[in-house]
Length: 157
Image (cartoon, rainbow, N blue to C red; front, side, top):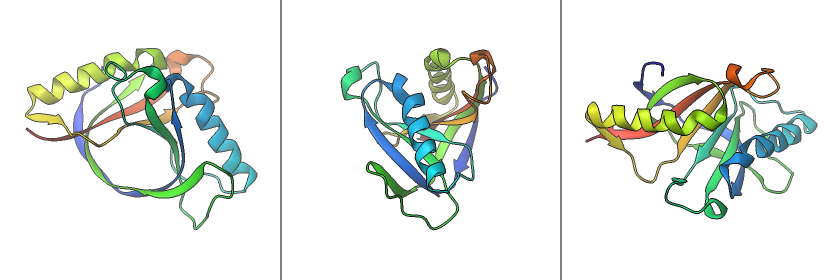
């Protein structure tokens, strides 16, 4: 794993598509959101991301809550059902950049959480984790080449 660092993520305006169910549907929901914004002529201005609200070790897969987001820098109100424009609040996060397939990301979360405990931080309850897709499906042929910044919200312990 790459080095973990703590940083401040600034607030941003995004287009969002929420969903409930297994987190494995993130790619499909993100493709749906990207297609809708491109059809409307409003491409995103920063890497896409996913927000995860629940711990899959504690919540049944069918009840997991998540959303995919595309940062957007222009005034645009989406017309497609299920897509909304919203302001994501800023957050202090412990983060690392991970390269590899998505199915190994849960191990990276465990490493980040261990690092936070060892370095005087704790998970900030009620704030979703974020995965920022720096190089994703469609941009890389092989899942080992995917690049994701994993952000876990933290506060001083």
